[in-house]
Figure: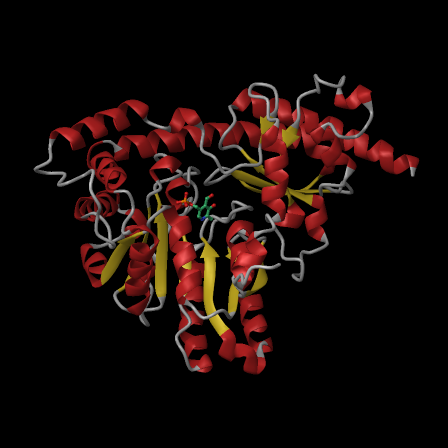
Length: 445
Ligand SMILES: Cc1ncc(COP(=O)(O)O)c(C=O)c1O
């Protein structure tokens, strides 16, 4: 007999394709042998353990400043953390933030990272159309679709989502414009690492205003800034906050401390106009678990006040160095097959398009790296398989109904977050062997 599950409940019983692939890999992952270029994990060395220990000590020792830090917290977030975020934004001039712009908006901390903010957005909107870039942040887009939303993707170029194509796509919606729910843009895109320029950002904010008028209802735009504090290439223009561009009160920014501090703290937040969206998100936090864990919020507040400036510089320096080296090795080693390469200027992804080499789970390239070709000379002897390399195939990153659906078969996301440099270099050498193998297999067919 079947349960009376919701649409979401029904779909959640089936793991998403990426989760299935990653679970299969994780179940017998061998530390120090297999190489994981698939996850968005940060490098362990970037996590400031000593600082976190000090922060925990201070929070525990000073209940007068960190009130009831081991108790329930309020749904909007810890006042200490909200204050510390404001100070940090203003002192680091993040997004060119001004005190006036900050005060004109509101901030809410999600119960469990930026992911929980994205989840809340999916809950407070009636399912409808969501516009986003292609390639897309597959985790959230997959979730939106399981919640009943229709994700429409628009191709990006090196400046971010193509606004001309976005406008064309909106025109094409015709009377379906009534179903347009919101626009979702990742400012340093996951998977591609493409950084949205300020000019594009401004155009998107203007498009949201224009199409709200045309749709007859407000169409907000959510800028996901998961990697924006990690733009490590100093030649890139400094991103400006969309809140400074927005006249219509439709722009929101979602931030996280996961990538710059520690994912396990699960601190994510949303900044935007006061009103029903922020109220809805705050209520959702209360419904999910009353608040984000207060202890973590207080530790994060301490870190922001005392350590974060130096931490941010250290983390950016590390990824900058890694990216420069990996870019060079990718060009040298994968050069013959490299049709296009994006990313490497912020966050920790490269997104590659290979010439003539397919990358999906059934491809010879993938199977070589997963050591599942069936050929012992490649896979290694049973029981002691050769080192495996995992990456995210492009087919998971492009929308199956979007214009990149076919190109996705030749693409892959390579993360330089988690693994150390020497292992990534080794993985790229395995990729060259995998590409050669793929060519011999297709020549034999
Ligand atoms: C684009 C994007 N948004 C949000 C998140 C999730 O961040 P958090 O750890 O704060 O939930 C990630 C994590 O990889 C991401 O890539």
